[in-house]
Length: 416
Image 1 (cartoon, rainbow, N blue to C red):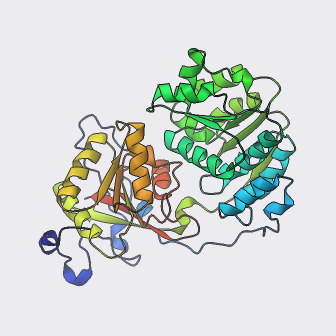
Image 2: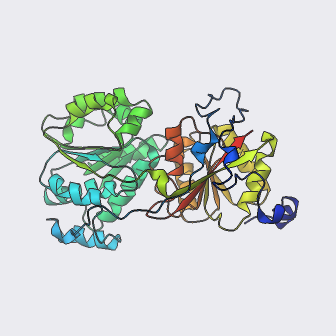
Image 3: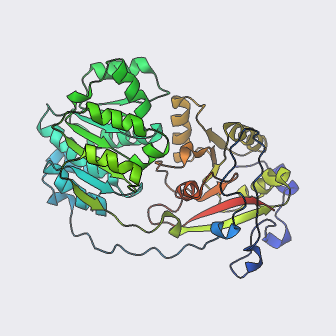
């Protein structure tokens, strides 16, 4: 995992009590101090969290409450094909999650659905299962799924392939950063399902490789994120090209005012299903790592990573250059690391993510490209090596740990 010759150099000090950790909650003398992050990026935008009270990064995980309404349904209660039901069982699903229990039936009935749920609730299966059943029973049906990020689109496509085993249902994944020739070849096969990111979809529409009027089933997934990252105009454009008669499925964690106009133009007489979960951060132990000299941050990080329990660590930074630099530094120190940011090709990004999921390396360093939509099991720690831009970004970052009912840990570097 690491080179032993460094362990003595950067040994754990003070009998295991790390310098740089905040004290437990009774150490309240830290709470009123202010901090600023180290800005070595030159052109890096200043974080809105600089100067915030460090108390916002210090919180103990609370107990995870049981579901308010027990689910008495099974997948046998849905009118779906036997082969699809078998694939669901093979996938390890036994009882529908709350969003699945509420959404699958109205989607099977052909209703438009607004699903208010965040990542990690099982919403992908909530729209895939009824759409797959619909396509299996009527081969004239085609579905288009629009997701905000390449990684989320890939995850949806992987789940689709699992559910459609031996069903002769085919998909095309059309996303930026991947081979265009391969994608065009997949489209020429007239796939039953197209899964796309907004940028590549717009490009293919303008080149007349995709005609939205051919799709009678449309899913907009993670709409709030699409709006956040600047695709609101594109989404409106897509809606204007869609057939009037269609089934529209809309999934978003929230519906801020900017989304209302999209929503009204997209769905007709919809069924709204909502899954109220505790905040992502509730089952994450949050704490800070204080550093007086920014130049010593990497040494502090090294000391953390050699401790027991830091088995699968996701480290967030604000710049691509910073990710690459720290990646090289940690590798030189003997750590197994991977890096992920927007300058990587799609193939590199997918190989890195898969390697991290399969525990081929201990540490994944990433920009905020990895902060939303990714479902990675058993991340033990999220470390904010650099401050995020906003508190919402912070919540999304730490939401990569403490998933599926587990307790996670989040640590944030602050400079005093």
